Image 1 (cartoon, protein in one colour):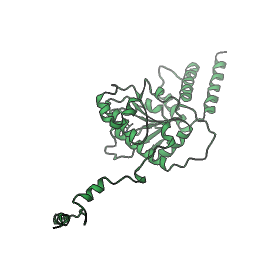
Image 2 (cartoon, protein in one colour; image 1 turned 30 degrees about the horizontal axis):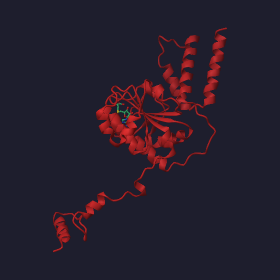
Image 3 (cartoon, helix red, strand yellow; image 1 turned 45 degrees about the vertical axis):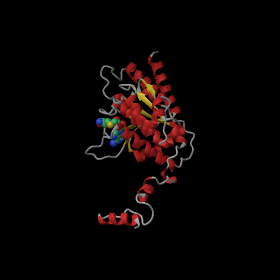
Image 4 (cartoon, helix red, strand yellow; image 1 turned 90 degrees about the vertical axis):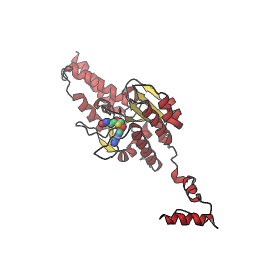
Length: 285
Ligand code: SAH
């Protein structure tokens, strides 16, 4: 008797047909699971990948750091930075990193978020939370082309917050864009490594079909240019009496938000600092 036919008949008896007319029992399932991956199932790293770094700020659980390294590795990203991690990567982190162990091992640590963002022309802060003084807010899918366009001009950071408290307003203040992964409003908080996975997947997917915009000779201000401008601006406002350091309110936060909207170029940041220096010189005469 034909065993495969019998096999199929038994399957039919219980109400479904997954067997094949020919071949050994189980062949259909085997070929389903071991089907060689076609071109569509690949995600080759783009040139932008090397310029995109993932910054985890104040992660509490080494396991999440390991899982984030694995998430990055699967999508072709390699540059991981940790800002004041509560505990250094440990065995649990290495276990969850699995094949992404090299990404974890080469992760760089930074004492402050500003240090982790050094050299970047765009920092995108990931948060599902609405904020009263919010930065320009985009969904991840909307933001992906902007992130890729910026990566043509210089390094870009994807910034993720602590598992419990998320990104603080201060941390978000160092970013130029707030990115949300659309989720059920009843519970929109993804696990940290899951958020990194979705972000890397979406950006890698967008990179596969990304048509670069017309090349411009724009020289975007770097994160350090912007930080230096804020420090200078703040000092000048204090010196002039406009800003009371004992009672600063949310002025600096507002200015950060304003400049985040502006997307300054290097020469513009330089011009603003030149003005501040001229005002200071006049004040001191
Ligand atoms: N309870 C925190 C969420 C922490 S989840 C809060 O209220 O913000 C850890 C990190 O994963 C977040 O800081 C954020 O960077 C990222 N994340 C989780 N869910 C997200 C979402 N829906 N959109 C964007 N980022 C998200």
